[in-house]
Image (tube, rainbow, N blue to C red; front, side, top):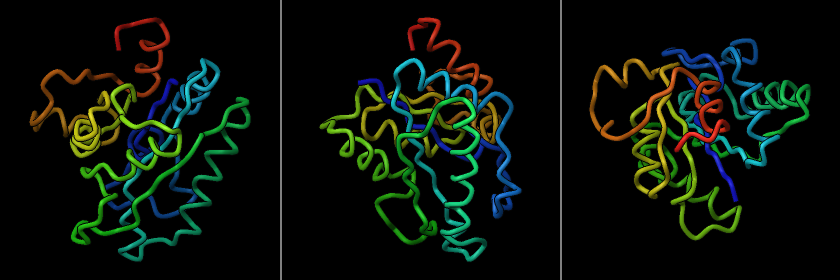
Length: 182
């Protein structure tokens, strides 16, 4: 089974240090919708795992978050594709939950949904160190994109040994589907 877990903000859509709070602010990065469609057409199951502490902070509601994901679903339908599942953590950084990345609860939930007992064959694409750390915790294969917070993550340089870096999701998907050793 071919499974990819994508972070959302900064990988699929534009990111903001002030949070993505409305459907209008949910703007896909160039090529990201098409890249997800290519993955789906190549037989991958594609999931999203995203920290959404803006809910906890009162910046937007779960209904607004669902509307953002509906916007993505509608864009993907134009390419005859769909996301297989979305896990999100609505908690704040100090809530000490098991789901907020860098903890791996969302990744473990996805593995359980598809019947996997380990995550070693799951590919994870993120733009921040916490995405990569969550992947490493469950022995998934982390990949970093330069979009979103990716450049900041690279500049910090912590915890990136051996982690491949791509310009964006489209670049990652192209290399993966061309048979690169990802």
